[in-house]
Length: 416
Image 1: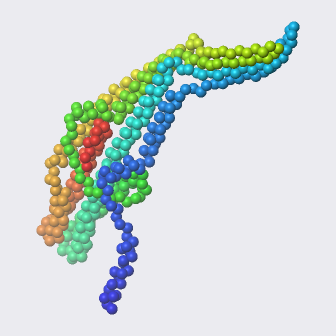
Image 2 (image 1 turned 60 degrees about the horizontal axis):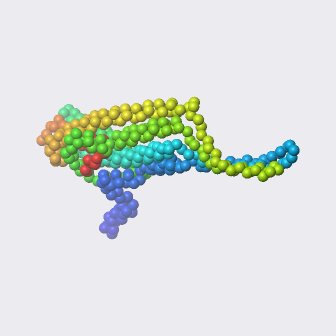
Image 3 (image 1 turned 45 degrees about the horizontal axis):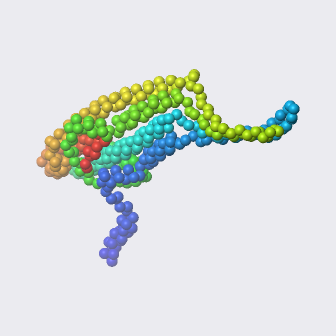
């Protein structure tokens, strides 16, 4: 009977254990990027932009619709012989653009499609880089929060142990208060790290197009900061594949076509079509022919639009040159920052984080035995957490620099 009674708490806890939700399966950085590229809602905006540009391309290639006109009335003739009858006329007119004008409009619309394609490609690359940054921020924030809670938990246990002892003077009391103060700070640090992790989680879910509060478990992140090509090679890659430069070049080519189109529009359009009329007033009179009309370019030679288009072309040339200089500056800055962080990480002991964690636990055990003073105990605990934060911050800075270089050069450089 006693055995049965002892099993009651376990039996009662079984439904609770079964109802406890399982933690989500860990997802790698590449898996998160794939989810974002497939589900991000903002991608639909850029896809719609491409569809709109293609629609404009069709409109630029279409001819103007022909126009049909008709007249109907009565005709009365007076004189030696008076007569009255029906008079009517009908004409069909088609407007023809000046040669080359439609081709120029098509060329401008083609460049607009290229701009939309480049915009989508740029957004996808930027989205992948941002997902990697946010995922690594979530991973490091969670690890920092766990480490801080571990250290603060040991401090709380130590304070509970010291309080139970009979104080033998002021020194033990002061040591207890010092440990309590450190625990308060550690609790705040753990809360801040947890808050950072929560913010990173919300941002990641938003980028992935999922419910904001959905839990996420980022798999262990192992970063590989490999050697980069030389700066000159990175600049050459940027000249070929940088998204901003491609956009500026497309805009410049597009503006050149707009200048030529404005010059072409100085010449008039031609309207041409058959005409047919008939009058029945005594005699039966029928007229058939071809009508031609065009405006005389006397007062408006489209000079204002030509000058405006040429000014826009000059602005596009200037924007391209400024973008080239800006991108070169950013590439040199990010390359220098990446190499600086990479050299710093090369000096580290690969197992330094784990060794510091073990040292913090060792200091706690020996302080309880009275083998180390309070200052050593507190210094080892804080040094462990500060070093862990510095490690993750340096890795994050190197990852951000590498991601920025990937965007600047349009080249895949990140290898998780």
